[in-house]
Image 1: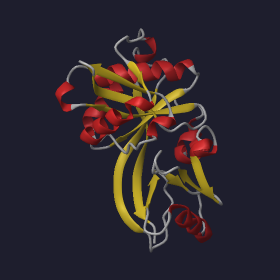
Image 2: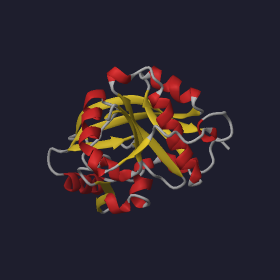
Image 3: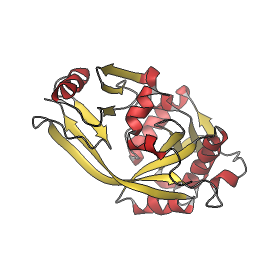
Image 4: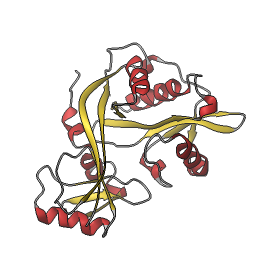
Length: 234
């Protein structure tokens, strides 16, 4: 049960761009990436040759950021490293933990749309849950919690490999922390994802022990270690 159809999670960016997010993709040859204001993630095949790296460089442009996410392939030597971050890929263990899938709908959780983008950008800029751009909300459903009309917490759907949906951008404003907002939002998203007969998964930085503990309480388990990497094209 734990690894059902999990092979799609070995290349979550590529699988998403070839499938559910094909309408948000740009590509040259076998190199692909999201449209710039949607996400920075790009991908190559499992064993790319020099021509494929050249295609990705042309796709992104000279001196541009290449966010390879968890892709293990090593770019050519003239690609400048920008960052390396160790983390985990976690999956929801359906039926293995009493939690999100069994929760009643939360009336305090609201669906966010294009009109909420300025507030979503402000919240993610203040809390830094990961990259979030003006069109990131087009990747899937984003939910929020408001206090006195102000957006203080949000989370949403990002990568969509076949049979799976990633939960991402889980964040709470500093003044609203400690009230269970992140748990409420993740529970609501798990319920929605399960209703589509898909499985939720999450990526989290290894150093973010507080978030890892939260996800474990909600029924997620570590599937594998991953390394997130970014480069600058030559």
